[in-house]
Image 1 (tube, rainbow, N blue to C red):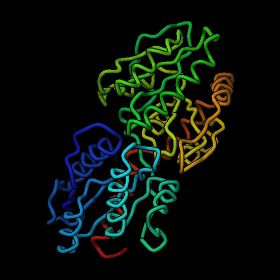
Image 2: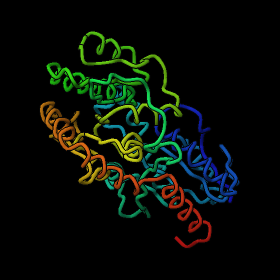
Image 3: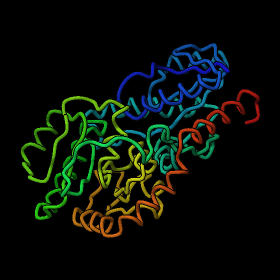
Length: 336
């Protein structure tokens, strides 16, 4: 099968990570992968990567198209309202042009309903999956303090205003633990300069900053996750977090917000802090609630570790890629 994509897979962010993993799987299965070519059996569009002109060209050639739906921009995500409108208009047009929409979660479908009538468009839910060759309990770990428990979070969270929100939550939560000398917070990966400044200004003795100036190489993430004791996920209204799914397969307990797809992904295998859902402003979360969830997780660590490992079996790269290829084959063979 010839499979087309709108852009190259190189780059940072969850969408590009997904593209690289899925393309490699397709090639290993004997399929051909192309970029910006319309003469393919099926075209996979993502985010806002397919332009209006590209959508028209695909329609003219009657090329079958699957759209992997991530999310939309809300008013509070970015300062430019024009950029928000342009992004959402293109996402809506891509959904309406697709022969099949793949939502990364039920929450992703709910988000799409803000801009299109999703009930009249063929769609299905396929969750992301981790590559279990690398994201597994066995493997190297980094040097770490032997007398401390480590809670790991990441610094890069997409659009600048969204990243700023998540970093502020990280700081507020870390402040709750200043008197816990046995618990340390690690913040990892490339940060926007203003967010790095915010972390430095907070000057918290229980926060360790790990290379905030550059992107973490993909191949290093399993080692960082294995080194930590708990993974803390702080992005609100996420469609389907790679970090959560990867941590599951490594077998690290996860704490997160009671927002977005996080409840779907974690089920009863991880604790979530009190949060007030909102699509009109950044959701409000209770830092002390997250404090309590972290303490509870450490208190019953073996239980949550086993639960999360079992849960991770639902979210593997193999399962995800097979599901996408089934949808593609059905389209090509006119079964859906």
